[in-house]
Image (cartoon, rainbow, N blue to C red; front, side, top):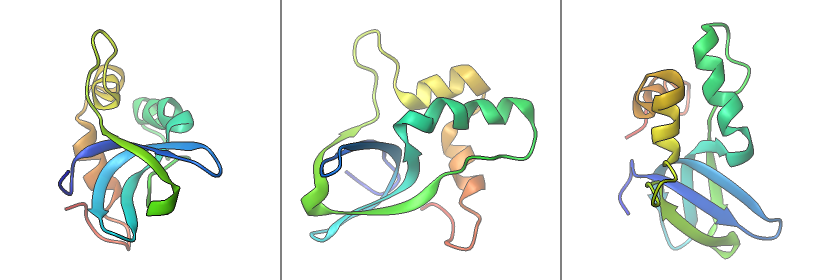
Length: 110
């Protein structure tokens, strides 16, 4: 997988799931610009109100020993991918939102 690919990362110890844009995959671990899957819908809905966001994505590093599996964010049968869900809910491409949101001090999404 290349940098910029939208991914789902499943972790263990503790068990967690994150969605976001892959920034780097190295022997040390995985760096993702994203958000906990449990917060995804709330994060997406805040773009509908036009108000000040209360949830945001973050650049996260996961040591490789915690990564159970990583999937490309893609449709599975009739189940929409997260980026497709975002487009349906908000009417914008999530990649554009990630780039806007990543203008913070840690730099733009590449």
